[in-house]
Image (tube, rainbow, N blue to C red; front, side, top):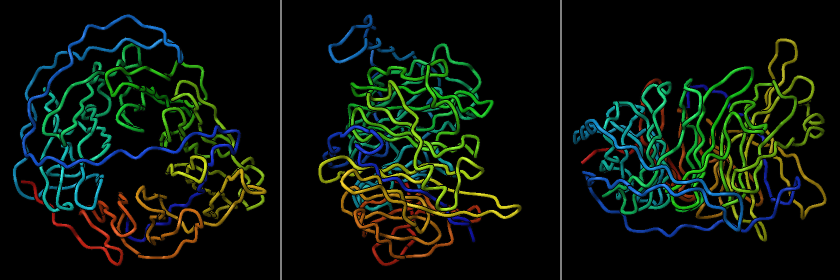
Length: 438
């Protein structure tokens, strides 16, 4: 975090999904971890070359769109990174030793990397996409130690690529297959700014791209796959009849193949605390208002000048249902004075009523491997995700992109005053991880 950075102020919403008229889905599955393959050079990619069939109706829903055959690509490959020091830009560790990163010789990086020794030694496994310009940033979803999806955007976010290819690996990047492509035909050529690539498992995934803005709107296209990336349906675009085009999108996550949450930062334009909810895999969305009366009673009248932005979605299994966790930042102005405060909102159909609770602040992230949950701000807190009894465990002076493996293993890309470093938490203290590319 920046030195002397203010706390990131939040509302955390615990979604046991029958609350707010949400469905009661099954608990999410956990992908099996496999042994990562160490390699420094990616093998040649195999492009899918299947004739596109006509749309076909299914018994389970609307017609399925024909797959887009990836366009033949031309141009040079990006030169391999030189061995030596490497800068990690984003980190996603699957185990304490094995994981993935985006990195390079500078921050932000544009290469895909893997490690099998806890982040000290890295190997480049960038998909072999011809014609990429340096600085073309990848969107990546890392499913387990072997499995990943990558979609490259343009270097400037204003150059709209033609049907960007979708790359897939199931051997930790030793080889990549161009399994499909994103059909972006008919969208405005204003911008192509990928925001979220998220997968529930290796079969079901979603890709949300910002394609324009104006009049308090952030226009997006949402694509979804149910066949491991071979076919991508355009679920939402600026021409769709949906309310989610209003406001900046801050997070997107799916708890299973049907249930998803989308969070917003409306900057006070919308007089409510809102989230988007889908029950059908992103085909249709409902924007729900949360706890207007409770926020007003707590001193943040969202219908009268105060506002709360939501983000940081986490899904965790509950006793009988799926539980989701998200946050929002609440602000109000009194004359020239800005007041900010954090809350946790707990929506629990098993309780007599929902609860609005204090929260110490920071970005919320749950561990998928134990019952711990963390508040990542300048002061870092840990709690059990059921009791929500947060205790201070550390204070830092840097900004971080945090990645929780378990309560005793956390990685972060730490940034402060223009410097970037990979750091690790061992349950008691932070230490710098010296990163080298082999």
